[in-house]
Amino acid sequence: MYPEDPDEPSLSSSSSEDGDDDGQEDMENLEAEIAEVSQQVETNPYLYDAHTRLITLLRKASELDRLRAARERMSQHFPLTPELWLEWIKDEMSLLTDGNDREPVYKLFKRALADYQNVDVWLEYCQFAIGGMAVGEANQLDRTRAVLEEALANQGLNFRQGALLFEVYREFEIICYAQLQSEAPSSSLIVFRLDQTSANTLDTKP
Image 1 (cartoon, rainbow, N blue to C red):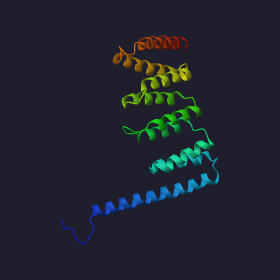
Image 2: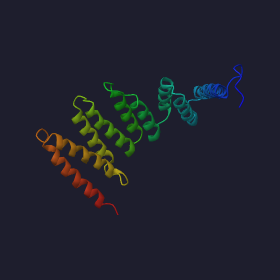
Image 3: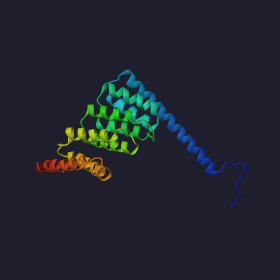
Image 4: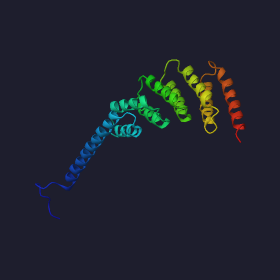
């Protein structure tokens, strides 16, 4: 084997430089497409596919502020699908840390449900509200229970997925009852009511 010439670039360094060049080129192409689609949206804000494409591109580029602006702009002209709302909500949830204000995410859930009454959105909303208890939000027990009650009122009788909401509420109350028997005696009554209502719902299915 011949010794490497110190004046010749090594294969590994050459490959690394090629990779960097490719990454830079990809980013430039991405920015160019973002600029192009942004112009389409500016010219005609009623191009639905252009809005969704712009959101996809900005997520890929990790452009948080521009992504939020693009979503807000689309929501001004179209009701967002449950999938688009959940994607937005989960992006915002991923940025939360202990001590963060969770109120903006609650507002997003309410906006999502104003566009579409969807069980998947309600399930995510219920789980988010339950998670608020772990971070010690004020009055979170009452707030979580109110969210769960609202979910059941709106989608509890949903033929295909309503039972999932009953199960989430039931598990929530069982945990509360186990932890707060002396402080929340009403929990056992709520669990019984949930069992009865859920059973009646299942009995109505063919």
